[in-house]
Length: 126
Image (cartoon, rainbow, N blue to C red; front, side):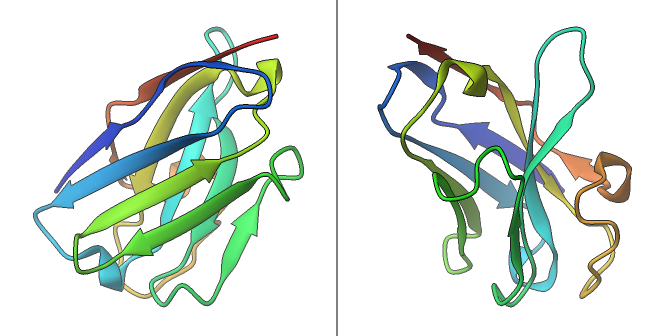
């Protein structure tokens, strides 16, 4: 299983960016997927989760109303639409997949995810 995140870059406060996470090796349609982010020297932080059906979607309070997680099963790709970006959104963003099919696990806990992309840097200036 490989996850390849892309779409990060430089943005100004108020801008929008969309991150993509292309999966290979198995279909994402059977697994819960999530985005996390990490600032150097801090713990990896939950951003958003979407389950295999897309019916259950959760966001951290810090991004709720601004970010939108989605999936395109035909393209085997996970997305994170980030709107109204703030400087505090600056971090390396990682996509992650649950290892077990059709399970939620602790969807906000990075230790519940078995597969990770390499991360993509998002930098937001004020």
